[in-house]
Length: 329
Image (cartoon, rainbow, N blue to C red; front, side):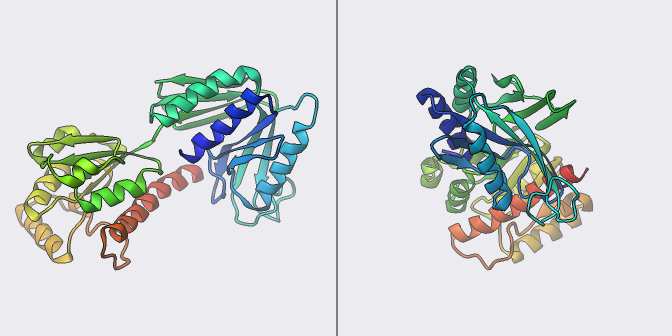
C-alpha cells in the first residue's frame, strides 16, 4: 500500500469507527520547501498518524494544532502558511530550508466517507481521477483527468479550492524484460511512475515473473515502439534489451520522439560505437544529446539491484528537477 493510500485509509477507518480525524494537506508550495504540493497526512483523536507534510518542527506543530482542534465540539478547517525562514516577519515554520508551503487542516466529516472510499479504490487499482477539496468537503470523480496536476485557488480564508490529478502522473517504459528490468520495476513500483514493460521474447522467465509492471506488452519487433510509446513531458523510457542489435532497433524507434527522458543501458564501449554510427549516418546532434547513455548515476553499480538503484536515482532527479522548476515559476 502506498503512503497516500495508507493515509486515506486511516481517515476512512476513523470515519467508520466514529473517531474524529484531521486531514493535513499541502495545497501550495514554493522553492525548496520540504513539503511539496500534494503531500498529505492524517491524524486522529486517538493519536494514530499516517503520511507527512514535510517533517521537522513544522510538522510537529501542525500535528499538535490538529489534535487540539479535534478536541473542539465542532472542529473547523483552516489554512496555514508556513515560511521556512527565521527572517520572515510572520508565519515562520521553525525551519530554515527556505521556500514556503500552505497546509490545509480539514476535519473529515461523515459525508466524506463515500468519496474517500472511491478515492481509495482508484489509488489501490492505479486508476485516474480528480480529487477536489473545498471548505464544503472532499470530492472525488473517478476516471477524469484535469488539465493540471495541481490547482490551488484562494479568494479568502473561507473561499478556496484545491484540485489534484490522482493517479500515477509519470509513465516509465522499460524496453527489455531481463533481470535489470525486473529489479528496476520492483524498486520503482512504490514511486510516482506507471510502469510499462516491453519484450520481444514473451517466453523469457524474468518477463513472465515481473509482477511489478502495471502493463506488459510482447512485441514482434522493437520497431513497434514508434507507435506504442507516446510522446510527452511525463514519458520516461529506459532501453535495456539483451543485446546491441535490439538496443539499436529500440533506440532508432525512439530517438525522434519528444520524451522527458530516454536512457540506454550498456557499456561505454557499446554506446560509443552506437553514437559513432549514428553521427556517421547524419542523425541530428540534438537527438543524440537527449540520450542518457550509459543510463544511471555513476556509482560503479554491478548487480541488477545496484544498476536499478542508479537508474531510479537518475529518474527521480530528472522528475523532481521539473517539479522544482514548476514551483519556482
